[in-house]
Length: 108
Image 1 (cartoon, helix red, strand yellow):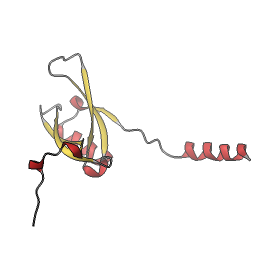
Image 2 (cartoon, helix red, strand yellow):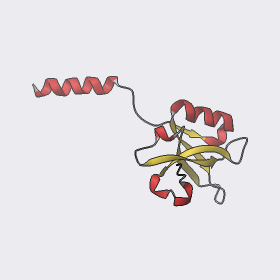
Image 3 (cartoon, rainbow, N blue to C red):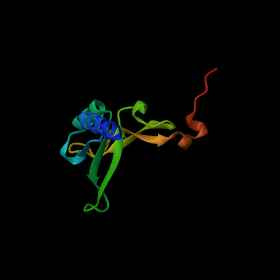
Image 4 (cartoon, one colour):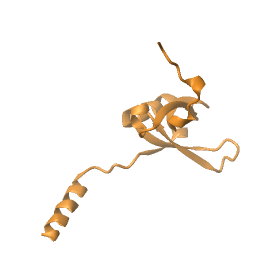
């Protein structure tokens, strides 16, 4: 019985698509292309060279909106270097504990 259950688990896991996140080089895309990829895939990892040390590669996870962030995180605007722009506006996930009281707006 254990062999049958293991075989079924193996078949199911092989038939589901991989949940891996895509990785891209932002310097090979325009800002519009990078934003389009992020919005289409909801979350991607973008790599780019460091400004102060060009031989060093930096990377981060960029998201379409807060729905792509884990619980307790929110989408905050950040900037990504691309082929055509030094600062392409995109979103990254930040912990909700990073919010200052000044960032909160209470409506009555």
